[in-house]
Image: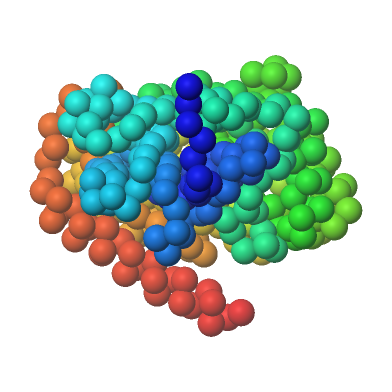
Length: 372
């Protein structure tokens, strides 16, 4: 017979990685609360006895941060400050077998799609009726809204399909219900996220439905800003821009990761687009919405990248003049098609190239901000 605990469990969730992980943590928090379990998010006080770490396994630095965080919490458990340590998320999905033997102090490991199993560890039930019920970890005026999971692309550097699976769109009705719920909680701005926004709807409706979805979201009373993140450039649905232009509560903003600009690099990365096509796309976007704010992400140090490729990237930035740019250094990821390629640069050289590129962009961003 199981004895009842005198002290009620308090769960703390630590979220590492991207905004998609944050949404997963918020949904988990909502489910725990609905089951009568007290939950906090990244508490700075030692006021909890159970820890859940939602990990990232995207690149080397993220994996290192995740492992260090797990070890810190396992140490707290060994010192008697915690009773249980659970790990979920991308790192756990990808390396569960290895991690179980290397870090035995963790009580249980869960993958990216195992929310019901996490709840079972608390003798709790998954409540399917709680669509949109989340414990927001963002400031109350904005929230992220995930419209799909996974990715069908085969970019040679990316392990996301290994961790998140194939692309699966959420039904439009479910997304609208979630958005309405967020607005009822006081949210004014919703940022749409996915591994790839522009693929939305192809699996469910046999056509790209992002533009249609945007129109439905823009009709929600009280939703003042809608912002788009992670749009893939290949076969970009231009009808999205027409909706953006027509609806005042859809921000003139687009986050479109390009990763590189040299054709031989784009080919090696399996990006399905050329430099010329990218420039034409950006020009077409600006033709429809001249004042659009564009952000992109780039990778430097990919195997085979030359000094000329770096100069090409810098020249491209000066020509296209994005509002914001982020730069990652390439890291070898097991299971990707680029993993078999020989790493041609040291980490120090990759970092130096990333800094060079960012220095060019910093001047561009500064000039654009100053004009505003």
